[in-house]
Length: 554
Image (cartoon, one colour):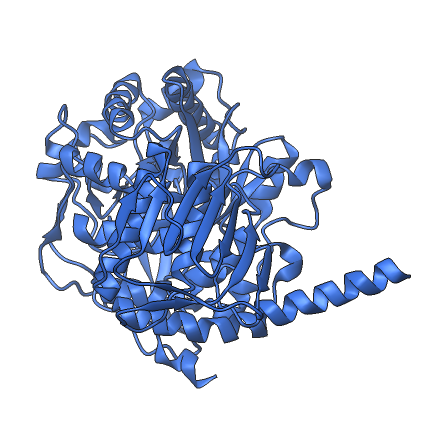
């Protein structure tokens, strides 16, 4: 009984202590040392590193403090008796990967990490202990923090195909992920609307595929009570509202990243312990590719154009032919991509491939017959397996959207489940890694409020739904649950034309996502999260980040 009472009092004490510190994501353990005085960082504070491999983390802290507080800190290899921030690598102090211990004392701060990323994550927590306004001296409460991540995959996505964002902003976006202890950046580089990565062997991909002649104005027409029919193929008819008018703005849009720029961004992310996973879409969402190289399509004599409207391109032929010529082309593309990205994972898309184009293609039907494929779903699986075999031969693993399950899952593939959780559940039951990113909770291009005050995808993903999402489905047993690698937020840019809009839709849903993926499940508490957000918003003000002021009304 005495042990139970002590445990209860400890828990209460921790809760009261944690309430005084407003870190997001919530650490595993926080204790405020109320009987000790605060530590003050000033121009004489020195960062102590004995291990030169920690120089990267030390420089990150130096740059942050200088940028936002105009305070210059220095590095030393000798620990002074006072006024120091000590970074120490010790792989034996915890059984958890990427764990850190942060202690603020009267005369300094100590961050001990079980890994280099662990040290970096400790610095992110230290940053959130700093004041939210500029000052010559930065006072930090005396605290003890023990922390480590819950999930190994903590990801965020950015679509640069619908709207292109320059290198400077992509780096800024990576910094946002770093602040929230995220460790994967899914870079959506190709789609129907633009090809954004230089491939030296195929220059037309960027000469032609990186540019479109306009973008749709407003939202794609919804379904009304009266409809008209329009022809897709001689055998297929679709319907849309009778009064639907699709207009584009006629403004040329585009851009791409050179290979040197890609290397620069990859290096920038690596210094923040973030792995960039590039996505090269196939076999669908390929209109930008086909505009440049139409011979790879199912209708090689057709004049393809880079798409100007959003959504699944059922009424456009955007599917690659599953021929040896196409596979060789894609192998050459992926060879250049893999040489640029050290990531062990390559995302190959695999979603929304309309089978009608293979069905009406004589060449596709011949390919199916020659390979003993019963239907077009099996042809899709054949396509993905061919590409996986090549990627695996280069020592890499493919990730694909949940449609890669159709016709049979490739042997080593990771499934990214966006159409609800079923794809992730099915993958886990087949002993495959799964990343959960269900559209209704994890798509941050959806509106945050019922009456959104800016154009967003015509769906609703409020902050509370994001925060309350649990990546491990109840349908899985303990063994299967281990295959849920983590989760990811997605930001599709159909209606996101500038960095401020990215920020507006990202924050504070990224804060909620980070807490889902980092913090212990049992510590999740939405009212407490809302309280900590108020401090976070002040930090965003300091950093010049745009977010919705409506959250301050609560």
